Image (cartoon, rainbow, N blue to C red; front, side, top):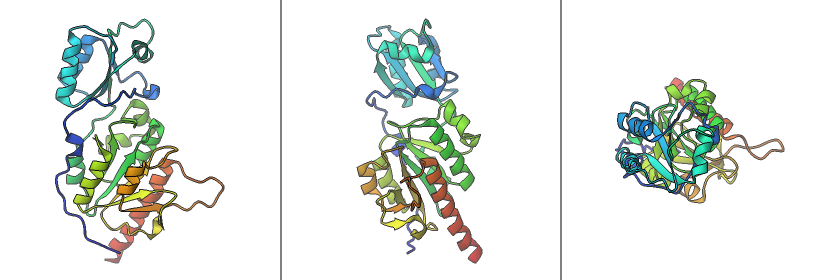
Length: 279
């Protein structure tokens, strides 16, 4: 069943007021090439904004006066910061490094706003939403699939998910330079705003009510994929317009999330190419 639902409207879920979430440390697989440590280097990186700082960790008990400057700059630029045990800092910068109780992680590529993804969307839109993908290699592979399938963009949550680190960049085989990636502070609120933009939200689940080939992918669609192991969170699944499933014919119950992304996005392209050629 087709239903014209697409009508662009501003979406600013990723631009809400900066806040300090529960502590979440970057994956140790992030690599060291995107690590900045020490009071002055971190402050100047935050001030210059020449490369996107993704997250800042501050050691518990750090009392240097410039720590307040770092926190203020994080708030000003909407950058997540957390306080963690001092020993957690050392494992990112190496033993003996004079980190002065602070370390920052720069993203391997710049994020865009959620508005930008909608403004640049094709007709009809095809957007990918990830609900808590934590493995950087999986995210990199998903970005590669999204680029090859011509998706309009990928939206990830700020918390409990991997960001655009060096491992993601390497695993994407260059796709990170072309795919628009946005962060949102509240995935469920963003999904509601996607619906307000008249885009259908299609989640993937083993409990899906229809096979993925039965959905009309020629409609404006945002595909929602869950994280490794747990799949979609309950509220996210409930907020989807429909849940679809990819039938399994072997003994393993599910696909890797990046493989599932490829199956769904290229089915959308297959259906849309048939419609286009038929016109």
